Every structure is written in C-alpha cells, then in structure tokens.
Image 1 (spheres, rainbow, N blue to C red):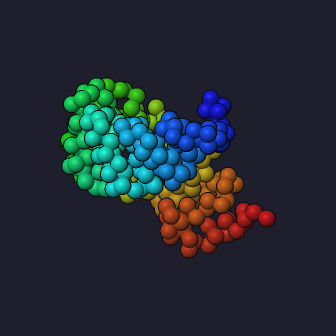
Image 2 (image 1 turned 90 degrees about the horizontal axis):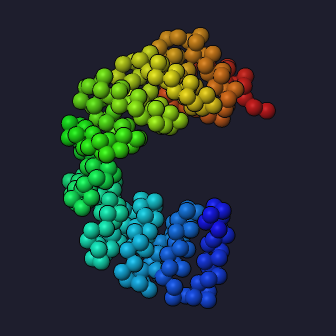
Image 3 (image 1 turned 60 degrees about the vertical axis):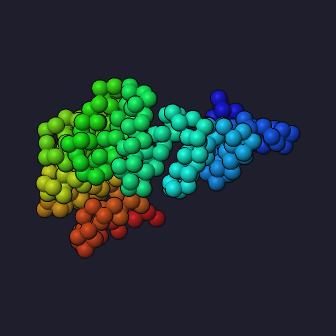
Length: 289
C-alpha cells in the first residue's frame, strides 16, 4: 500500500491487522505513520500513544507522536513527549532536532540553540543542526551569528535551499545587499518555483526601495512561474504603486484572465487600488458568468 502511495488502503489494512493483534506496537506505529501522512493528526497521536504504551522504549513512536503534535502547533505538549523519549535515548538526533524546532516555534531561541548544539556535538557533519542554530539566531535578529551558522550548514551541503534563503535574509538584515542577492541567486537556482520566495522578497524590496525596486525581481519570478497569477497580481500592484497605471492595468488584465478569483491579492499588495475606478471596471469586466 505504501509503495502504491495508497495511505488510506494501508490504514485500513493496519486497522484490520490490529483487530486481530491489538498489542502489536509495530502495528500501531505503522497506523500512526499512515494517519500522519493522511493529515489525520489526532488519530495519529492516539496510534503512536498506543505503540509507546505497549513498548515504552519505542523511540520512533514518541517522535511520531511529537511530529503530529507539532503539525497541530501543540509545541509544549510535543516537548513533553520528546523529553520523555530522551529518557530512553539521550543522543537521538531526530528527537534533539525536534526539541530545537519546538522551542524556536515558542520563541525560546536560547533553548532551541541548546538542543541544536547538542546535535552538532553528537554529529558535527549534520547540516540541519547548524542550520537550526542559524535560524534561532536569525529569529532574534542576530544576523551576524546567523550568517556564520548558515555558512557552516552550506559547507556540508551546498544544495541546502533553506540555508541559502536564511543566509540571504541575514545578509540583507546586515545591510550586505550584494552578498544577500548572491545567496538568493543560489536559492533560486535550486528551487525557482517557490512562490513564497518571490512574494516575500518582492514585498521586502518594495518596502525598502519603493514599488519600482521590486519589479526586476518579480519579472524574473514570473519567467520561472509562468502560470502563477499571484506573481502577476503582485507585479501589477507594484506598477500601479509606482505610478505606471497603463502598464499596471495590462498586467492586471493578464492576472484576471489567469485567475479572477484571486484579484483581492491586488488590494493586499496595493490597498489604494481598491478605490481606483479603472481597476474596478477591469475587474467587473472579467467577472466570470
């Protein structure tokens, strides 16, 4: 079932198996994994809980339960589960990384770094741990330290997309525009279809350098993502905000043809557009039905 990507069929099989073998910790663990993949996190938590109750040193079951709790943003409860797991294995890398992620999500960056650093002590060649330390520094706007640790992660894995993004953000935070855009280029080369990248950097450049300052980046984003109406709306908004109404309306028309339902994005990027008669007329003209 897993090989066929049939998680629902796999879960049904596990349920039948557990009817006959209710004390199988592996059965409950596999059911939890399948529920997790299906996004049924509450059911996954219960299944992992049964697995660890039957076998109290089942590290993967503790981790699975914590991972499902994290998906529900229940970070404090996930921490309790992970600390319980550490009683059975104090050097489990996955558990330590997850603890770092939970504490960072809760804003306790010092404790997050503590657990990420423990990972580097156990496995110094693990890029995720170095990245985690960098991310926890960046969350506190300590960009110089963040850059150092992101670079450590990239020394171990040059194709670490999130580390390139983090490095770009931190270099930009330090005012090192050239270094920031060099790191951003590396990220784009690895994953040019991440719309969040283009949108976030477009908004950042527009805020810092005016709407015209985002146009070149957004144009490149549209070249890489030709079917993304979101980026076309954002580009149109920047044109309108820069006073280039005729060009802005052309791109707005393109975006409306691509996906009229998302036209509210234009107002999110450029609120004054909502009061512009030419914009309202164009949106009404392309209203479906």
